[in-house]
Length: 256
Image (tube, rainbow, N blue to C red; front, top):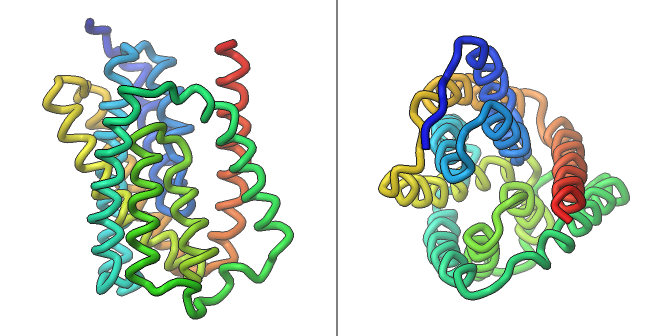
């Protein structure tokens, strides 16, 4: 199924791609901007997820590259997070074929809201980097398998959950947590994109202009995160988490 791409769509695609890249680079959750846009302009549902992964992957790479170049990401042990997130994502993708993820539509929004409330009640959390609660390697193995499985099984909010876990149990500050989350997420995005592209589920007419602006937004977001520090990232994180949870609740209510 194809649809016509008209000139009036491009300003919306440019603005949506840039805003999503900025949000993703700082706090995760850019999909809550781009997926409604793709659906709203008439992209066939079977093409939406693949096209969204295509444009988001460019922003993820840009933000991850920026953070790595600035030596914000602890790559010496983040590789374990990347590896086990890929394994967990594959397991989640297999599991979703056998199980109904509908219950998560109800549980996840409230879990996200609980995270936002916890952030507000613990203002010092994520302000500075401290010693992790678990051995770093064990932490990344558990994080990768758990959130990788969730990403493959359900998906929404994965970046935000990654940041929260890296702050809460990994004891990274918000800037380093956001940076590590982008590097780990880049691996899962690349894997998923390969699958979607192989199945022909990417509309490049829409994805390419969004990707170009997603790159610009990601670079701006990563730069701002480094310049303004954990306080700004924390505030953006809370806003994104609340917005994402409300969107998921609205989608669930609308689908009843």
